[in-house]
Image: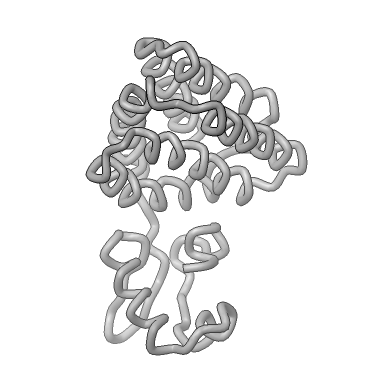
Length: 192
């Protein structure tokens, strides 16, 4: 839902159906249904008196989300090993380059979206629809709050955190994949 995923609405901000539907260029009724779905993800709270508001996440909730996401991404990377084509490596390398560029420009919204795309592509390559579905449930929550809470990310940090993941897939090294993903999540958690 547009700005909710990109960090355009801060925790506690009211999400006016009419205004946001107009911003997105959609009719209000389908937007209302989408808003209920987002409510089910825990991104927003909807009450009859106050309408929809972006729900602030507690530090504990974010830490739990990071831990679960790291385990899912480690499993996804292990499953993706052996399924990697040259096109898959090229796609992941391109996403890494674009993340570094976004960090260079100080565009943390783009960096967070590209981080999600990088890990999402690995989850697709895992070949597990169930794993992908569970990851998709957690990813928007952590990405939205990463965007709001993470300190400025440098291009070198992007390289340091993501290059080992890419290399672990290239060399089919499960231990390297696990270590790299856990290192990335630990760094993100440290910035909370």
